[in-house]
Amino acid sequence: MSDRAVLHVKGRVLVGPEDVRDELWVVDGRVSYDRPPGARDIRTVTGWTLPGLVDAHCHVGLDRHGAVPQDVAEKQALTDRDAGTLLIRDAGSPSDTRWVDDREDLPKIIRAGRHIARTRRYIRNYAWEIEPEDLVAYVAQEARRGDGWVKLVGDWIDRDLGDLSACWPRGAVEAAIAEAHRLGARVTAHCFSEDSLQDLVEAGIDCVEHATGLTEDLIPLFAEQGVAIVPTLVNIATFPQLADGGESRFPRWSAHMRRLHERRYDTVRNAYDAGIPVFVGTDAGGGLAHGLAAAEVAELVTAGIPPLRALAAGTWTARSWLGRPGLEEGAPADLVVYDEDPRADVRVLGAPRRVVLNGRVVG
Image (cartoon, rainbow, N blue to C red; front, side, top):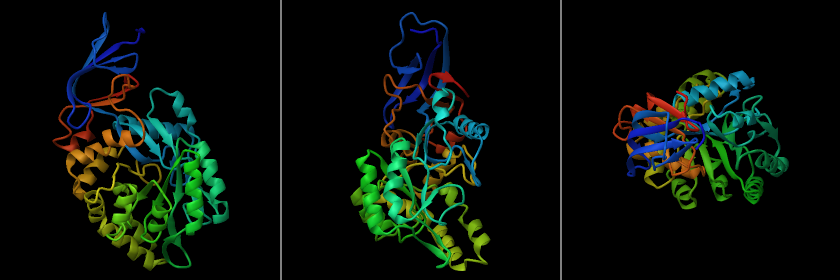
């Protein structure tokens, strides 16, 4: 045993939805369910304990204008951490955030490399902007740079059309996704609209971000292929404001965005009811603040997902999906302690009592 203080977490430890234990110990930064012999300098924390929250769509190192300086990225990561988010899937960023891996006081990040978009079909300064003939090469590049994920921009506004439309021809995405899989990476895509989804799913995509265009005829395809969605409902809430801003130039796009917003809860509930995996993600780091994972869990409940399943979508099942441990024996001690049972009321997630990261109380 090192000279690091032993932490004793008591009360109700939610190892899983139904696996509840009375206590755990943190020794050398890792979880143990056995009292360490001869332990001294013991600090005790009491409450309802969860594994650290997961934000599966978050952009550390990014704001609405593009990459940000390291000190700004640090503040973003700290905001997420203090809200209880200890595992982030960074769904596309032009920033190099590898320095975060050397900081034991910052959340763990799973990177998807930089967004890959069609030329002039995404937010300026965010993505590699390319044409279809280069898609396979750029997917291979980002697969090697990332942590097992690649992020495509599946659709965006076509200024000539005046509305959302798919960015890539079917053959290009088939070849690109096959190359990512060959390199051991999963692929996800930004998709607001309806018309990009069938090609992406049939091409073998692993996940779709936002998925506001998911219609009743597409839901069975998603369910059959096991394609997950990350709805980012706290971000979809901004659609009416975006539509108002684009009304004069792109009225067709604005009306489309409003329709997608109006049916957002039905879309998510129908997906969940069909067995499509749904996970928590906020889309923080563009125009949205960090630290909103608890609010996204609450939005999933509002959409009609049972509270326990919504909670799992931001904790136990999300960690399993991303290949990271929860509160298993020997796992890194990344956990959040609350005053009340979050299974009874997910709004509890908005007020953590203690945040423990790598075995240290950091908040």
